[in-house]
Image: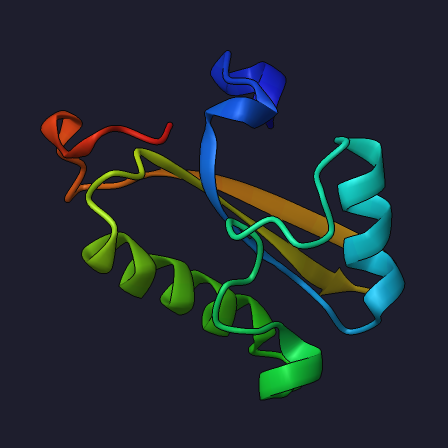
Length: 107
């Protein structure tokens, strides 16, 4: 999805990652060389912390990212990575409708 948008991982200011198992997030962070304590990743807690509602975890992730955008006008882009089931997944890159470049932009 990064290639499709022309963005890089550094352009993403907020991540909401599916976390049914901790190894999913750890593998993502390792692949993109993101620190395991990076404040951009699941800042309100992932599924391990707040729960994993069966068949609606993607909606929860998207809702959390939308709410974070409202609080973070300095973040222009966010990424949601979701489980689709049976080992598949999907991701969405969003552009923050509340983005304000004068807020000291964090891509």
